[in-house]
Image (cartoon, rainbow, N blue to C red; front, side):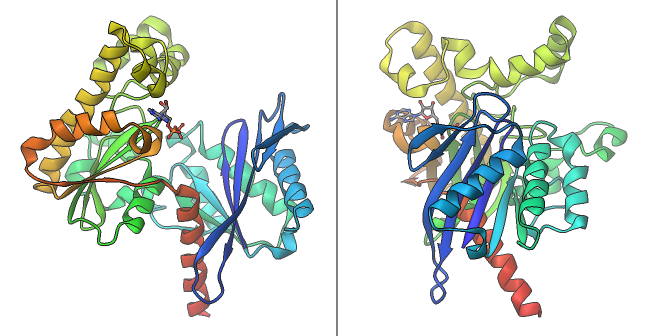
Length: 361
Ligand code: ADP
């Protein structure tokens, strides 16, 4: 059994998978999450929530392991834990076994993802303390885009800033990797849209990412629920001058996008409204999906299929149709809808590393 762990700033989400010994297939057993860490915490299992006391990530993880034990899945049944890590920088481009060396590399990526990687590390350390003998693995949300060519990842800025790691990385890698895995055959030139609260698009050539809309951070690219999407660098500098670093950061990440244009980041509610603001926000969202989609089609040298995933991509047919309509200039293509299963992808990553370890010994 493999426990996939996704540690956020105030929550830890886990999903337990069982691997079939013969086929290697994974089946999802249960999801357990603790939210509100450090405040009004609650533990949710199988859709039922109950209040708990979780002052930090270690306490939350302890509660989750205790809950799993009550459900008949004690830690003695676990083969491994698999962590979802937001940022792997330039070095961590494959799933790995967690060792002191890989922990040091994840620490090196903290400046690139100061809001995310520390939570992931906290969960790794907490689990090491709770179950010292359990092998831990890590997958990286940036890794899928490691195949992008250098012209795509490089910002044309002075060498000193580039040497500090300022370049395009791209995100939503688990979602795109899971999409590629679920498509058989994988269309040769695939334009993939992950449209959730965060949103990005990715040019996937023969199963590999060659370009994506997010960059140094997840703020760039498409109009999102609460992130701005593309914004001139000098505009960002002015925001910092006007509002200060913290407030400007908050605005671009939490108060922009659909929320800034129409008061909510909830696409379902926007589609149900008929006022001008809501219409404009939806227009803006679709327009930038099409604009960036066109650029990614150029990176692919043409188009065979467009695939949608994420809460909007999977559920909002009207949005899918508008985007597909806007891309008609590219000629005939298939339109696909894929259910994102990022946790399963992370579990499969760990299985692949374990299989390689077993072959090596
Ligand atoms: P996150 O990125 O936080 O995981 P999701 O992938 O769940 O988010 O996507 C959330 C978005 O999906 C919200 O804007 C929500 O309104 C939208 N959404 C979910 N269901 C529908 C639906 N039936 N129609 C339109 N939008 C939907």
